[in-house]
Image (cartoon, rainbow, N blue to C red):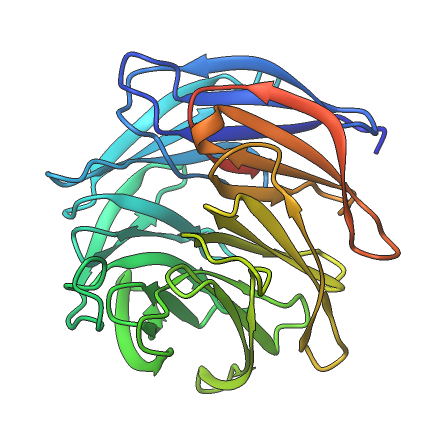
Length: 349
């Protein structure tokens, strides 16, 4: 990896702290250089860039009141952020953002608000709220599933449907996307195991297999995906924890390598990354579970090219860098670790 890569991090920083940061990733060992930071947002936890690297979107994850989504223009040279506009999420704790493939719509999921917000994206990157959909129901756990908690969204490979993971109701909710109106039309729902708590999702690059990491029961579920009518058929459920572990832990993030050969999931509590080999049919075979290089690995990201992984360790205030072995999928710490305030999201541009 000789080229330099730009990335942005979101965090649980306070308003007066530089919670959004631009970084440059250099060299085979993954040396990070902080280029700039931006204060003024309370808990800018989740960030998402557009494909051309010209826009960045970030949430302000406030819980007691409606959150906000911010749109920024990215300066080509320095990566500095210039505000475009912001918009309310009409719900508390926005915690995830998803862009459709043609970058016409942005979806924000509001964890405590129990709602999903949709925004039309203007030619200049500005956001206009076009829909706000309320989820209903609950799961069996009184502490975490007393009501709906939408946690993430993903557009399917054909860009026709949006799937929402609702941790509170143990569902993957399917919506048909009306791009003309900027609306989500409920199409159906897939129930997960009671108390599973689906959190983040990832499609296999081939588009016919879908993976969900379940926060509460520490599992990854693999599904066969039918894109014609957005139907998920269960294939497999695997644990992200070693069988001998008896402590408290919750899953956070999930990613598949761009070649589709390996899948990874993060464990908070056990403080590790679980690695899996992806079979020809999409089923998962455990490879290893490795320490994450810090505490509370919330989100992580695989660098373009698939050779490095960066892990955002929220409670140890650091980003740890790992090398991915192309032949085995195993993770090897590079020894690089970079201090930053409560990192929770990493987005490559």
